[in-house]
Image (tube, rainbow, N blue to C red):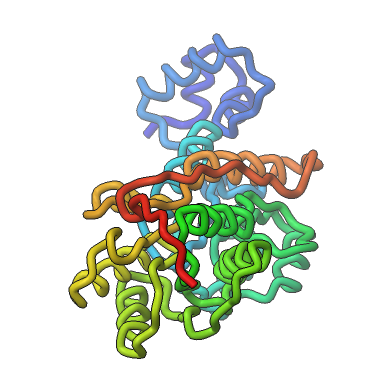
Length: 336
């Protein structure tokens, strides 16, 4: 079995140079790095990663905490994270949390014990105060979540403004009785999107009808159940604004099963622009988040934190896009 000394001898460099190359140090000439990597491949040298960790106090691993793997919204974000991580010699580990504060606490304790080098979290189970306290000591980036006054590294869009924009789009089509399916407003992300809906109605001086706001699980079944409850309660509405594409897909199915046509009877909007949004029938009008860019910026921020760099700004607010498709039609009436 080849050793680091064998690699150094074959490449004509010191063992310290080989070590620097293995640890991705920038203090090595490109041609030297190329020569040493060729020798490593030729000798099939496998460095002792555990020994490297003891020497450098780095694991080469970062952890991504997501609420649920079933939500395809996270896939493209993770691809962005992995692109940057791989280019910088890091491995990405993924943990499903279900917004469980105990599970999240466990992984933050692992970070304290140096079992990984940093965390990117999409979850919202842990208390903000504890999360901020942890971020002052360890490399942590929050993605797709933001609370006013949050003092920690964060990459997101303006969820409230995006929701206000898509609500205004429905209002501009002539809709006045617009249902809102906000998901679980105990999670700040969904509360922000509900707030955008409420602000749009207030700005247009349209009465907010509590019976048209229906909380549920933020998934397909939740959207289906919420609309079914509204229909059974004989609620009157011409549009359904949802705070997630999976909610919207469930809502459309419930409307169709009740004999209603989308969009000629009821318009429906989503949020996030998951892959299924463009493939579903009718295709879904929604808010497109820059998912891959969120992942890239989150990982770049985490790398800066791991390297001990001072961030130019804590929060990156990225742009979003309204994507208009079949599910909203061209309704031009006005409901009282």
